[in-house]
Image (cartoon, rainbow, N blue to C red; front, side, top):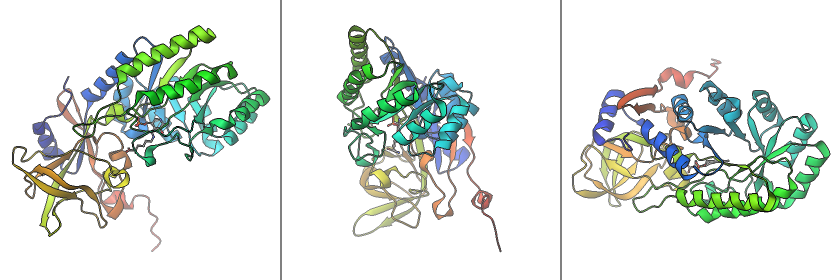
Length: 404
Ligand code: LLP
């Protein structure tokens, strides 16, 4: 099992499949899941991969084969999961802001559902009464996560039923005999501090007596992975110990037990992914030296959208002395990947690799500037397999209706 992909393998992939190119390491994804399994081995935990991070069908199949389950944020993701072979029972659908018809579709697929508004909960009660178990997503008023755009549990967040409206949830449950089987709270992405998860378990602990049919407590995703060299990840082993303690406290206090659910996205796929670009132009200015690559925020939006840091490596000239570059793309809008970054000397034609590109990389790409979305490659068993073709000109016109 190899946890990282060597420069030689990345160069070979770029030569075979061209750039820009997303490359994923199957071993690393399986390893990350094993880490979680181990950390929670003494608990009654179920892990659902938050597939919004990366939905390539081969990744979904790999995740399924490794024994992990899947969390979806749209019915289409659930359909992809079914296509990848997940049984309905292993699919979780955590909706937000959707029309009730999408919940009806989810019910018809027989998958697990978390509802996040009183309005949809009431419709659910009217339509299904006690016949279909359901989880409810709550907004706990906890500020957590790497930046405001990816924080979802704070007071002003749109996600979940506000915790202060819990009495209304209970009234709806009683009025329609709704089978509330789960409580769900996801406070954000890139949560380093284990105590955030334990704040959520404290909330759950107090709510348990109000919900006699509870089967699961869902703590969402959001485990942090290192992006920078000195970054630390969420301490999964410590979290495992704390969860064990939480389970014991529940048993002692209530003589009940529940499944604990997690929905990690980044933790499973971020570090397994690499994004390879080629340097088109070097431009020396009075402010900085630009290294312009054959990509942009149309392919990797995280730096521009979240000011995210991705390590950038020159795999064509790795041992050269460091110089400072501003790495930008080729689209007709400012698309800075990194400002004034120390990188081994760059020459036009060199391959620059962005690390941590597995999660929310390809998945958030677009055709802006009518450029093609990149190809995707999976390295498995030492071999590079093309898992998504690079787009071609016809793809740009595919769904357009030409009137003239
Ligand atoms: N569960 C729910 C309900 C979520 O909303 C999310 C992420 C996850 C699980 C998985 O979170 P993760 O383990 O991946 O942190 N595009 C942003 C991240 C947005 C996360 C959205 N929700 C980024 O690139 O940083």
